[in-house]
Structures are given as structure tokens and as C-alpha cells.
Image (cartoon, rainbow, N blue to C red; front, side, top):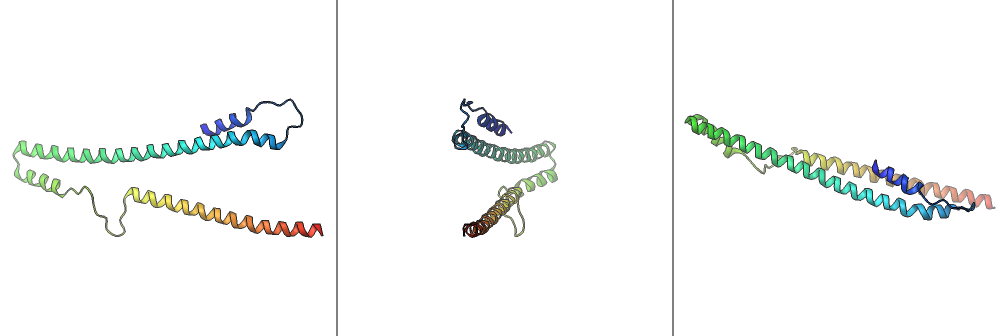
Length: 153
């Protein structure tokens, strides 16, 4: 949103020329550098926002792992304090069975894998749409040139 506001300021806050013969070429020569600067700034902002989101996801993951280990350790400590052998055995089994790097079976996926697949499918859809637009513009360009050549005859 801030990029759109910035683009509006950069585009429409141009110096007012006293001459009446202000051409479209002059307008684009003044606005194109401004628009490209806004575009580059927006790309940079989205890049850092993406990195920030990834760091938040990783931080949440490690926090959850730490909390799980702390809870299991607390349960073991309580079992040792109560000297309950059955509870100690259960806690130790749970701690030993904890897999830090699980191997996924066929067909299983983590949230991160599903998110990456979703992004990949969106990118592929976007590229297909761009190819269709390019093919359509090439086909329309050919028809226009034929009609122009027929008018010249």
C-alpha cells in the first residue's frame, strides 16, 4: 500500500512546465525513472518481508521443539521425585522415541513442503498465463499487420 502511495507522489508531483507543448515523450521521460525506482523498492521490500516471514516460521518451529523437550524433561523430573518406576520408564521411552529429523513416508508432507508446492503451482500458472498472453499478442499482431497492408493497397 505504501508503494502505491509513493508511486502516486513520485508520478504526479512532477514540476509544472509553463509551456503548453508538453509532449507525451517528456511525460514518460520524467515518470519512467520514478516508476522504476518505486518498482525496485517494492521488490526489495517484498524480498525482506518474505525473509522475515520465513524466520518467524523457523522461530516458531524451534520454540515448539524446545517446549516439547522441556515438557518431557519436566515429566521425567516429577517421576524421579515421586520414585514411580512405571512413570520413569514411560518418560524415558517417550524421550528415546522422539525423532528430531523424521523420515517421511510416501505421500506424507510437512507444512513447509505443502507451502512450497503451492507456491510452485502458482508460479507455473502465472508462467502459463504469460505464455498465453504472449501467444495471443503475437497472433493479434499478425492480423493487424495484414489489415494495415490491405488498407495501404
